Length: 114
Image 1 (spheres, rainbow, N blue to C red):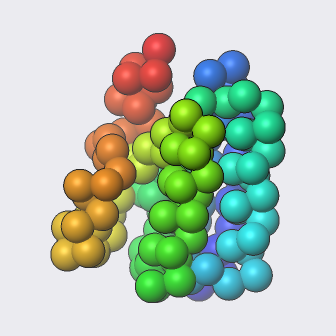
Image 2: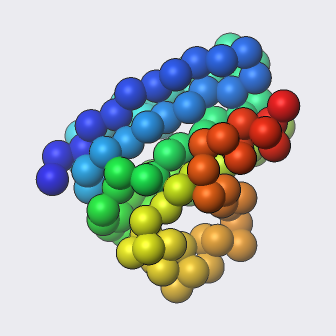
């Protein structure tokens, strides 16, 4: 399933809503560019909503790590929200749940940023 996305920009954070399979294809560089733009705009938080992601490949994991690295290098943070059961298991198996802060919902991530 092709990856689609939309971004919502707020004062403190940018929220990326992704739908489909996160496989790091041609959309990957666009998502990394969005993080770079957030860094340039002095945004400290980048929230990736995973509620509509059904599959993440190793390239998709690499994409998330690249996004996190860019934000942390500028003093920011990437939060993941609402992973499906399948994606949650992947985060646990790869131990990425120890690297990323994962919130059960966008609302809870917004509360943490406020």
